Image (cartoon, rainbow over all chains, first blue to last red; front, top):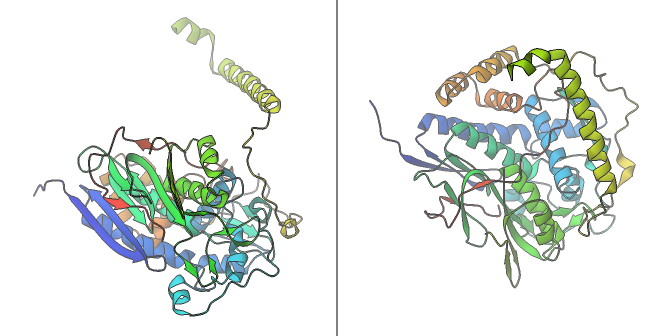
Length: 290
Length: 148
């Protein structure tokens, strides 16, 4: 039986309760279900909140060269690329600082604990340069002793990119990291909203939003500035960036927030990011093309 | 065109390509060396250098056999995936795998990770430039990027 193409949307939660959705045009529902299953498989293998995950075991083996799966190797490479793209500002090795700042359990559990306070102010130090402490080879990787990495948003962006590519004509939103591929339901691309209610239509690319307004607790938030080892004191509360992929957008967004509203616009322009929005406490900034 | 093709065989083309590559690299090097640091030059975050990887532990030599121990089933699926011409063919290959296997296969297929010559080379981050549709969107957002 031939069925007419149709728009389908599937919503679910993953990554510590983050809202996720997959929107497809003319894609078999079984294939969408398979993608949702992959999101959970990805989370299970790479969460830092389970000691038996591959990422936790890799961190626990810091100092040794250990075998890693193709997936972990690829993501470690992606974090190195994000680090280079962001001039070192996106640094997966901030994990010890993040834990010291209080983010030592899943955000769902953290929000239930009253009175968690920032604990990193004393003894905080800059994160190590990622390329100096992380080596990745074919089927193996090595972290410097005492170091640990968190794949964070770049990992989510990578996964959203791969799933959107797989589905061919889809928009995949994994906790705010959106990857788009295809002409969309009406041929005009997939329209994605940014943090300031503006929207952009894409046929291929990614949108990421980050900020200090979520994943925060009494005394801290999850955006660690690698230059200080402390939660960033940036004036940007939220930022969205559109780029060629969700992983790239994620790296640019995080860097823009850490740079602050005075430097981010020029920095983004120098990297060719033509569509972005920034929010501070009292104003909204937007690229000329947004 | 055909006369040129006859006169310049593959070996000539390789030599020409190599010379061209050297010229291009030298030119690029000179251009980089002579470029002033832009006012908004990349940041140089202060970093903790006390934690560097101990590179005295030998890493595998470039000529050593790859350490990548990939499941033979995934290797076979990777070959099939690369030969697949349509989305339907690709999806059919993936349906025979578990969710975790599909993830591993996707990582292998993304290129930087596959075992083989040059697979350890760092590749650039994906492109900055998205394919944005000109003008205002014709439809309301199907989804919104947000702070999670």
